[in-house]
Image (cartoon, rainbow, N blue to C red; front, side):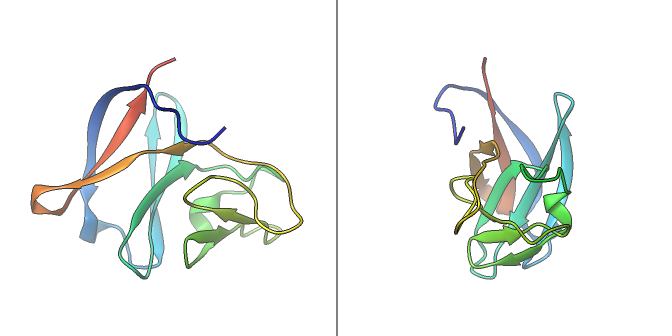
Length: 112
């Protein structure tokens, strides 16, 4: 799946400091649950909040580098690409993120 390029609009989510360092927040966009992560390097990513393996809530997983480990079965999902790392297969939808003036986090809402 990966990030789609057609962006319809940007929606403000929160302040960057509202997302715990090496943690996440959950938001619902158009009936889809999205996990918004902040890495130790202070980079913010957003992905679909459901593991492709068993449907686990990725927002409850452990954030390391630019990945998250699913809390159910430890499948590792790359936050940049949405793809499973290692020998696992599967992927989740990713969303573009922008940090704007005042440290406000915006998510790109995709058309289609």
